[in-house]
Image (cartoon, rainbow, N blue to C red; front, side, top):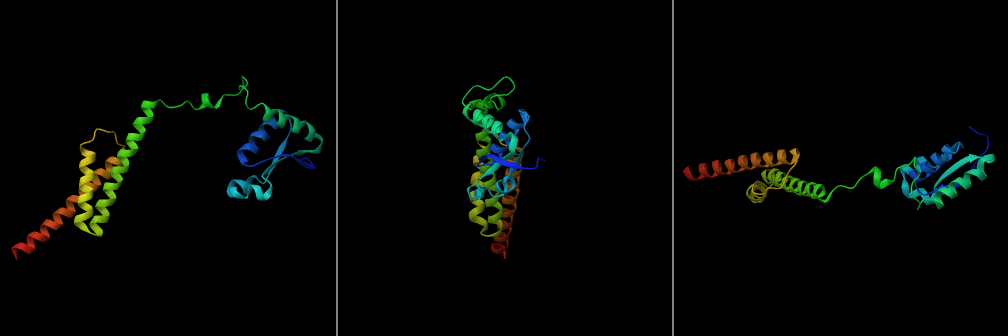
Length: 179
């Protein structure tokens, strides 16, 4: 580690500082980060401690500032041949795929509500919440939207809990009526 390190630039977040450190490493300048661990754990302290500082040896400070300012000024340009544009690295999903995911999430949410209503209804107030759960089960059963395997497990769990609840209510009422 160099004997005397000086800060050349400060960043609000740790990923920005890491990008700067890597840019300096590509130029052959060894750089270190100060405050990165604090900011990554407690991000709102970034301003209080002066952000994440990029430190280099005093003899490389001028060259490091030039590289980082050049990099900062050139962010609006096309990426060089060695780098990949963010849009190319993470291609956007098609609208059809995104709609299918949203439909699956919506169906899973209904199945989760049915499951929670069935279980809480069994424990708290059997007929009311179980009727609501039964209504949600019918909504899922007569809807053609896709659902994940976790959603199907919740669906069948809600059906089972509701059957147990209504069987118990029927047995209780049958015993009361025939006694």
